[in-house]
Length: 155
Image 1: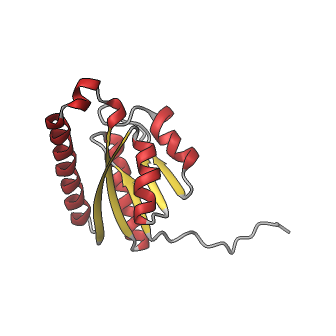
Image 2 (image 1 turned 90 degrees about the horizontal axis):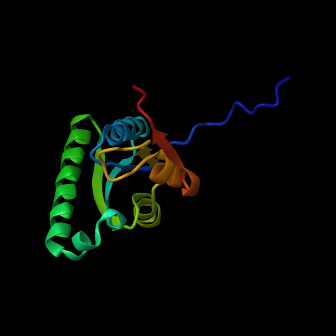
Image 3 (image 1 turned 120 degrees about the vertical axis):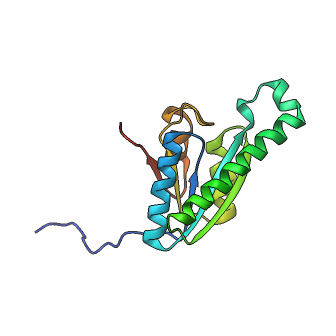
């Protein structure tokens, strides 16, 4: 007789954070987050981060550059929210954060603020704010105190 306890129910998440950027893997993370939010009828919080650590010293000191990047990210967040709602997600909000690195900002600022119980990020993004699986997604997978999913779209 097996010792497996097969009476365990999967978690029904209440507050799902998805970290997005302008990359195919970021979009794939968003698609997975929308699906999970619909499955669990949960709140979907779409988050994007301005990684201050990736800015040159000159860019970081120019307020106009920072304002421009922030406006670009906030416009993208509005597009992501509209897309999620068009796909059937019901309880969608967005949040902007900044910090030295995206993973740290998501885990230290966003997750506690929204009381998240699941965080979803893309595996890597060559064109976006996050560098590679070896950095921000791996950081989240290792350090999150909540369930995490690294969404990877295989080609």
